[in-house]
Length: 568
Image 1 (cartoon, rainbow, N blue to C red):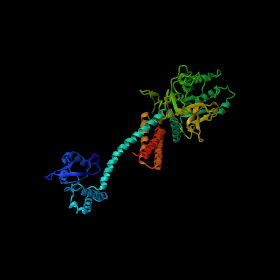
Image 2: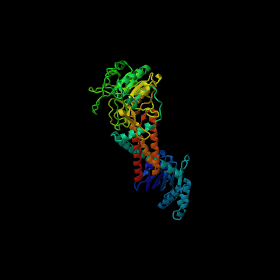
Image 3: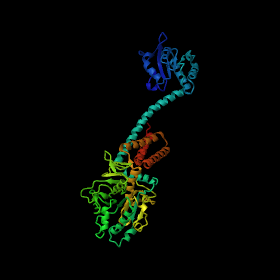
Image 4: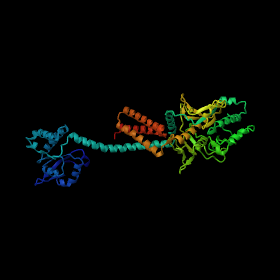
């Protein structure tokens, strides 16, 4: 006896019973015999059979004796198609009918024609078993169209695929999460930081040019300017006499702010009291000093003694391990022993003084975040974007460089000699921020940037130009809402990396050929790169590129290897 009553098959295969059955003397009910002493009534199977019909059972075959009673009981269950035997059937006849019926039915013939062909092919048994061709009979629900073999197979295939797809989806999700977690762990340890910073620099360099910032003017002191002052008392790159001439001329042109980006840890010469008075009394003149750093044993540099504390700003920089300046230090708390006690950066002081004329001042949100005009300056943390466990002391943010043909051409520049010779119009100075600093290479006042030269080397810019970049960032954000650079939180980064890890798993699962999989992964990485570039260009977002790429490739490799070596 064979009986197929497994619930999972109700969706796909016919209900099939081969064994012994009988019809009650009334002809209205029937029994299915499990063995010689035990039997089941259709009433005992009614709940399971009704559930099977609701789930899509289309065909039941009872290749057993005397099945008319079974057929009449099944009518109440509304099984679409039912095949039974009218009378007791010999085993040889039952086997022959099933064989010929399945051959015809699976060969594509409709249900009725398949039963008819099976009967005709059993005519050879008539001599041994009279009326053998008469035994099979079809009970039909008139409201149902008989299913074809292909329809039954397709229904079973779809249900089987749905079940397997759910299992595979869970497995792929598990693999993707595990790989994403591994990548996040490696990233958290800082192993990927150099690669991430390099990728970030590459994206920055691809951004389109911006308009120059016309609110600033740089008076640069070149090597020629230094040499021209050789007859004066040498005091760094700018002598007291030259500074006095420069300030006198500048004041006449009415700039909004003047910033001296040159260390002067010494007093003005006694024979130049006018310079002392001008430095003390001018509320638009600001100077720099350097805060000492106990951790690096770097001594500070005192400010000019003539400048009051409120017109001082520190020039300290936050430099990465590769000596590139990617961050902007806005404020810090100097150690008590430092010769420079300025709490705000030089760039901040000049920007605040410039904005004060427009009634824009620095405010703070309840959580201490800076608010300046249209911009909110959120500080970075030890784990921000590609940075992992960095020193985030003070109030730091990412530096969004302005690029116009080059990092230096975004701002108007004039040499000291040109300015003193009267080659600059008053309109080029009025209401601007004027920065004074040296570009002479002999003073080694330059910093590395994320940008590169046409020859492929890391680009250096003079310190005064770097200060101009920082001031421009503050003014552009406060006045125009220019995007500040930001990064996702650690949880947002995790979701982003998990998504790309899952993408790699799906590609490997659905693409069997390695060549096509390589092309698909390459296209996915291209889309990832484009997404990171759009986020950076349009909204200033630093979205993880390297970890997402690694997660995508690792997931794709693991799933592809598993499919080819041990199919699931």
